Image 1 (cartoon, rainbow, N blue to C red):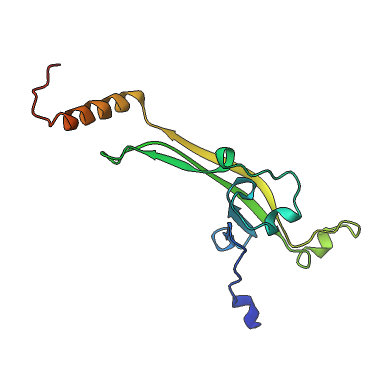
Image 2: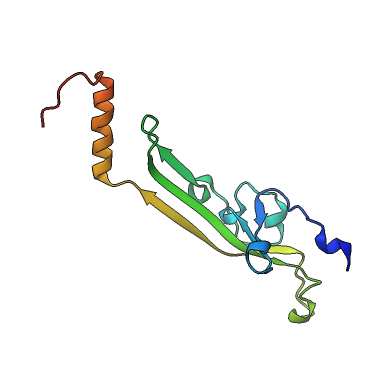
Length: 137
């Protein structure tokens, strides 16, 4: 066996190789539009316009209760096109470098229910007032 098969190659920053999780298919995960990633990823791919507001993930956490009020998790699934491995699938006049090609990106959103916000506000008010007053409902 060739020992180079077992060498773990590190990708330029901004992407994660998920090949081992996906039955050895050459999938790579990143932030959408390769946000905050090495410029290697965008040099052979057109149409990328990374934007913190549109493509970044975020959490809003209420600091006293530690409750997540809102979250937005975004990631992009890409396929690693290695020219030498897939030579027979490509046309002669199409030059595909070793490019990480975007397939799609997704967002998983969470918003806390309005009722819980009211609950948290009431709780914070009680804490702020020292919690000594009796509640009049």
